Image (cartoon, rainbow, N blue to C red; front, side):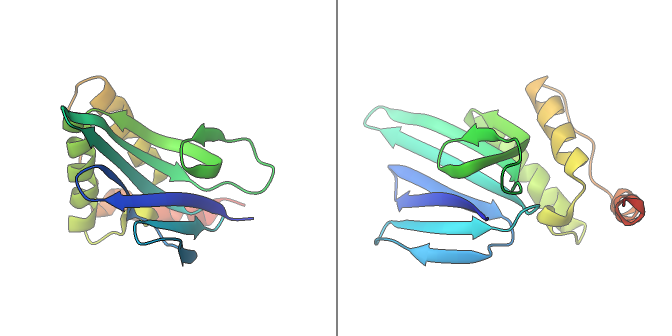
Length: 152
């Protein structure tokens, strides 16, 4: 079973998009809506933004790991059945900082979906506490790849 995410793009009103992740399947539902699916274990980022006549009413980013069928998971709006939360931030300054952290991982030549999941937890914790997160480095990524290779 795959994890599905419902996306909407109504410019300047409701914008839900995938910042990174390996999409396994995609379906266009309407001119402004589509549904994407991720295989179990896939890591992806969902950005949600909405506004009304008075300004921004929602600004959020979630970095999730898709779960196996029947596995425990957290419920997240627009994500079925849900996922393992690695990062969950709201408010534009924190969302912007998380997007900068994603760009920093990419600047190392690492796809964000391949980065160590602990890095996203670290980013979540530091930004939630109002602290500056550590940068992701190629050496840390190499250590993650070695550690992952040792797991059964």
